[in-house]
Image (cartoon, rainbow, N blue to C red; front, side, top):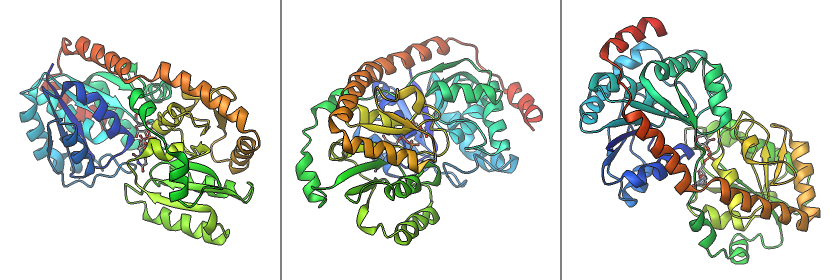
Length: 395
Ligand code: UDP
Ligand code: GLC
């Protein structure tokens, strides 16, 4: 099957890392079309996945507006027409992000190619404005022959928002061997970081208010002096104000010697192995949470915020811990438990590793996606009249 993948971002976020894994088996007969230049393009090229960049005048911001009304769709028309032309060479269009859905939906009607939408987001007011929720849902309902949701929570939110397209849950898959074959030199890395004698709580996420790095910093006040927070990740989508707030918070609380920012890194498994525990602190429901599974695969204890997909990944007290989102005191209690009971937390981490190996194998999740695509490639296509009918229905 020849697939045209669409993604709005040139940055390396979770949805893009997922796409890298999904597209790889199709690399001899696919094209990944990005709407912005960036390091994700390089990553795709390194994986020898054919890629093109069609830059769009609409600013590509992950957490903000999908499009600001019909005028934005008009501005997107040149891109839509280009994608429609490209897609005639392919059997199927696979939209991986909300703006890719906007473009892919109309292009699919123009080119008469079926559209599949991989939904990586929780369509709710915590993540999208009312108008963008409506836009995503109505485009998916009208144009997508299938939706692939990255968790049950994502599927439920989509349906609650009015989503009616056939929706299948496929969790992110991971290259388990790559995780396990890594020669972790825990002590060397800790030494390089100058943290060999510290109890390290890792946090692996882009810097963004809803990812909740401020909750971990607040929790440090309730942990013992030798606990250090290692913040790995960058502000990918212009969240500079939040970064400044984090630095102010650290200064005000006198925590400069207990928080380290490492920026964006590509050696995640090694860094995770240098940690004593990893905290996930999203204050809004996490759609899936790749970092949670990566921590489990690495055999490191994980504490996750109990909302969205995270609840499906971790069984609290068995394969990690779940704490209420936005609650630094409960988070600190868990960190303190891990510090006081290293054997117990290692036991939990071992359970988690075994569970993650069973549930999140890339070969299995890619097979689920392949079957879904096989089914829908036969499905009837939308026609241009759907586009015309969609405008009044949506607005
Ligand atoms: N990540 C990375 N380098 C960093 C921070 C994060 O490669 O410095 C990766 C991380 O390992 C994970 C992904 O980025 O695979 C983030 O995905 P997740 O689903 O956790 O969150 P998202 O940012 O997509 O909402
Ligand atoms: C999105 C979500 C994240 C998920 C990732 C991969 O970026 O925010 O929770 O893990 O997609 O599906």
